[in-house]
Amino acid sequence: MTTEEITFLYRDRVYYFLLKQLGDAEAAMDILQETFLKVHHKLGQLKDPEKLESWFFQVARNTMKDHLSREARLVAAIDPGSGNSIEREPEPCCFDRFIRELPPGYRESIELVYIQGKKQQEASESLGISLPNIKARIRRAKNMLKDKFADCCGYDLNEEGKLIGEADCRQCNQVIG
Image 1 (spheres, rainbow, N blue to C red):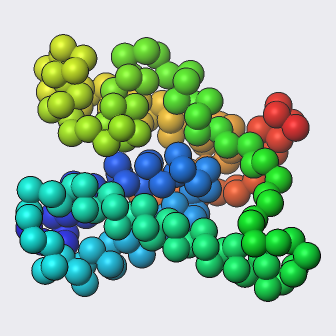
Image 2 (tube, rainbow, N blue to C red):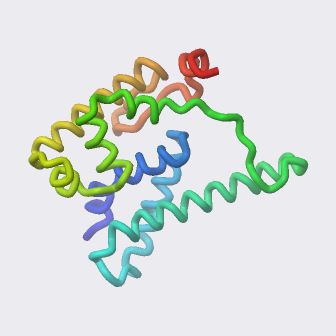
């Protein structure tokens, strides 16, 4: 399997996994890109192609841990009194709220595929619906999420399909803060 095929298969699932873990779209995208570079360079070391998916997610998890560790060292270097851990102000993240606000069928589909990492076929079997139906639900849910991010946070998609816009959502800060 080529890196391009792997990218096509896992890009969205790994991105949403990282976004859920980090609550930061920009950091999730940075880590995703770094993960793809690592996978590209080390793909030949994968002994069992059947374990590609779990290996890929492990590379993403390790890359995320490395990123957070570098960030903690940077904060400690800038502010030695801060200790070794990063103390962030709670960042309002619309992602969880937007997922919860989806209609149940759409929410279940998104959670199974993008948060739990199941393949669409597995998700369709879990929900007792056809594969075309789960694909339609996911497509509609993505459109709903895109609209929610655009309305609430000023995010939009660029030509490459990447989120762009405000990193600090004023509307969420008013609601949450």
